[in-house]
Amino acid sequence: MEKAAETETKKIDSEKKGFNIQEKIKNLGNDVDNLAKKTGDEASKLAKTINGEIKSLSGEIKSIDVKDDVKSITGRVEKLVDTTGDNAKKLASEIKTDIKKLMDKI
Image 1 (cartoon, rainbow, N blue to C red):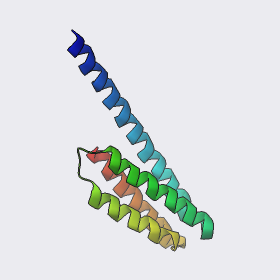
Image 2: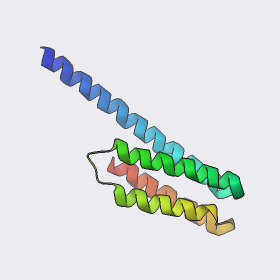
Image 3: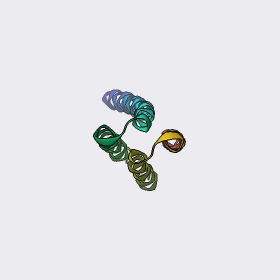
């Protein structure tokens, strides 16, 4: 009886964790859109925040190998800091697509 309760608790905890991860990924998409509109120091600070969140996600997802995905996304977030106009919008869209693919893996 006690093992069943422990198993149920672990299941609920993992479901909560999955929900938190999906929520974080959704927020990252919004942050990427904001980054495409910012320049200078504001853009650099936001990029560091975004990359920190993406890297923390890879730490939380131990059962799935997402290192290459994270590396690709963080590299393009850094590139987005220096990109403006239509190119920034296009790059932001690509990054958001990759973030959604990362979410699908989870």
